[in-house]
Length: 103
Image 1 (cartoon, rainbow, N blue to C red):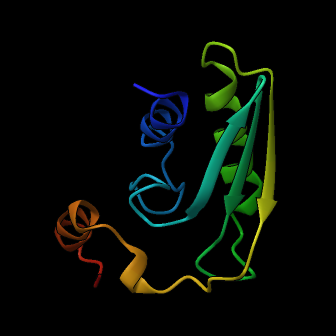
Image 2 (image 1 turned 120 degrees about the vertical axis):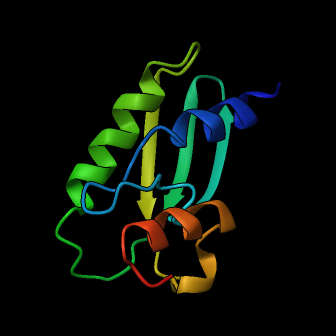
């Protein structure tokens, strides 16, 4: 498994604090790259005023720093592409329906 694949897998453990769905399955992770111990991650949110922005970034950083060979995590919040419901992965849609959330 490549480092990037392992990092994507690790991020499936990080859930949105308001909806118990991973940030990966919510479509919030735009891109991830790894080079010499440094993870560069591009992250978007469902809304500019998301009250959980800092919590999510802290959770992402904490989880990735537990991975072997990861020494630093740089997170850039991006608004392009704009998040839409179409970015929610299919595996998350069923869980959201179970929770009574329209996906």
